[in-house]
Every structure is written in C-alpha cells, then in structure tokens.
Image (cartoon, rainbow, N blue to C red; front, side, top):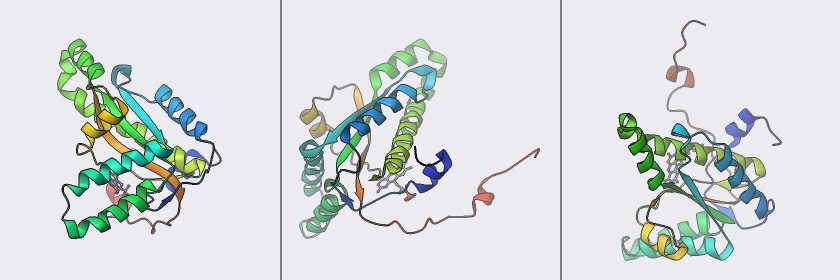
Length: 202
Ligand SMILES: Cc1cc2nc3c(=O)[nH]c(=O)nc-3n(C[C@H](O)[C@H](O)[C@H](O)COP(=O)(O)O)c2cc1C
C-alpha cells in the first residue's frame, strides 16, 4: 500500500466514468478479494460473504443484463439516456465485483444462537458493508476508480442464471471498477464532522 490507511480512506471516492485500461494486473484484484475474504471480521466468524469477480466480456454481460432489465421499466424516450449512463459509468470499466451473502450460513448461525437470531440479518448487511468498503478503498489505492451500485433485486434472477449462482446467495451490491476518467467534486459535508461526534473524558 503506497499510502497510509487514513490517506487511502480519504482518497476513496465514487467514480462515474470508467475506462477499461489495465491499471494493475487483473490477478492483483483477485488476490485483493482473496485477502479481504480471509481477513474481514464477521459475526461469530460466520464468513457469510461471497464475492463474484467479473472481467472483460463477463463484466460486459452484467451491465447488458442491467440495461435489459431497465429497458422493461424505463419510459422509451428516457431509456437512451439511461443506457448511455450505464455504458459510460459502469460497462466501460475493467470489471465488476458482485457482493453476496450466503444465507445458508446465516440460517445455521440463527439456529446455533437463537438468542441472536433477530440480529443476524442486520449483521450480515453490516458485514457485507465492511467487505465493500475495504475493497473499494484498496481498489482506489491500486489506482482504480470504483462505485457502489444496487441494481439488485432487479437483476438477481438473470445474474443467477448467467453465472450459476446458487439460491442461497443473496445479492447485496455491485461494484464496477476501472480507470477513473472523472474527477469527483470536493466532498460535501451535511454538517461539520465535529457536530456529528461526541467526546467524553478527554
Ligand atoms: C451503503 C451505500 C449505498 C450506496 N448506494 C449507491 C448506489 O446505489 N448508487 C450510487 O451511485 N452510489 C451509491 N453509494 C455511493 C454514495 O452515494 C457515495 O459514497 C456518497 O455520495 C459519497 O461520495 P464519495 O463516494 O465520492 O465519497 C452508496 C454508498 C453507500 C455507503
């Protein structure tokens, strides 16, 4: 990692104009995902996160599925603009990560710890968020731009069919990444961070 952890966290942004050039070897992205799956915390160490990595034509196929599904929903006169956005912001990139949670592991956890059963689905979302954040930040640190998208559940069935995803896996988010072609505007604060924290006993 070229930067410190906090520098990398501060540098991470959402990019909506991606290119497909090689910023770093694709195998490094696979290694990154492997490392994150091996190290992220999870409730009772359940390790329910599952990540599908799509490059090249597989990545294109995902965004074609998104366009095809949106075509059925969006008014005909608006669809051209929608498709252009999907193509330029996401499909034009190098790859996409699909974040899933394996519900079978979570059901087993609920069964093993009935006292916490009503918390498990919330923890599952939190845990997936940790994976998403760590990978998003690490991709940025590698020189890639990325964004976080939620075309689920619209695309779930078509995606499951295309990549033989088992019924137990629930799609949580999609993260397209690639060369960052746009420069995000400076960060907007809804209120100063100091107003959003409380400190006692300093
Ligand atoms: C849980 C979560 C869900 C998000 N969902 C979307 C989304 O569906 N589409 C999108 O374009 N951005 C999504 N974002 C990105 C936020 O809009 C973005 O992070 C925020 O505006 C701050 O901008 P930055 O990422 O450039 O710092 C999401 C972010 C988070 C943390």
